[in-house]
Length: 111
Image 1 (tube, rainbow, N blue to C red):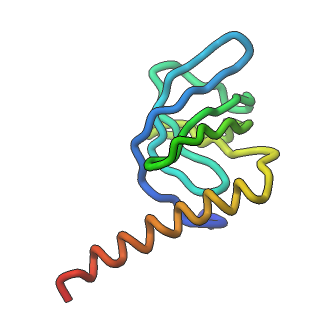
Image 2 (image 1 turned 90 degrees about the horizontal axis):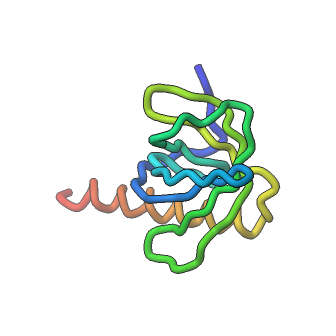
């Protein structure tokens, strides 16, 4: 059984992947501070490095990180972030935690 370093949250936001001169518009499906699951109309190569640009919902800042395509499944391609500054990783972690906290409150609202 695979053990993840942190929980992924479901997301649905647009992003851009770049490799050399090639630009691919794609959609993030899952996210955590270490990477994301990406669905793309174009095939992404496992083992390939991409520059990934995206904004978190509710934020104007565009994040531009380097990512490594590590696996593929029926839902998309897993892209692990590389060389991300610790403060950016912490920001991503806070975003995930806030989402999870909001989900928990929503699930318990009727109790």
